[in-house]
Image (cartoon, rainbow, N blue to C red):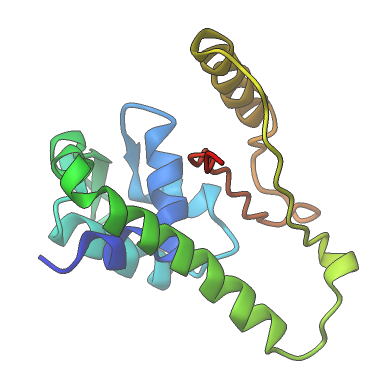
Amino acid sequence: MKNINEIILNPVRMRIIQEVSTGQSITANELCERINDVPRTTMYRHINILIDNNILTVVSEKKVRGSLERTIALNISEISKHNTIEHAAQNAFGFLMTNYGKFHKYFNGEHLDPAKEKIFLNNMVLMMSDTEFDQFIEELRQFILKYNFEPTERRKARDISIISAPVEEN
């Protein structure tokens, strides 16, 4: 198996994982319909990479018009193996470098218009108890789910990253 960060933090694969995580299972065809701005061949290639590396698991297969339709789900046990204190620094670094790579590619590209693309960076420190923070995270999760719309011609994918980081004590 390759480095899990190299596998998971690819933008297309991250979107696949996010879509699969919203339910118990989904067919590959349904994934292609939900992430319709990525070509089907590209989607199937990324799905196969996730299956080959045990991030996704095939829960069932059936013949549909001569093709094999797979229903897939997240392999929580495999993902959990890498979500440990020993891997935490590497996971955080991979996450941050993936985001840096997106900005680097964008700002070194042509036709830059950050205002039109609605690109922004923001950082703030909030004062909260653990209970208040847990409530905040749950409300944030519900808020994000509220705006997780189905793709349409007028909608485009927007990559939103949220980080809870330690605050340096003086």
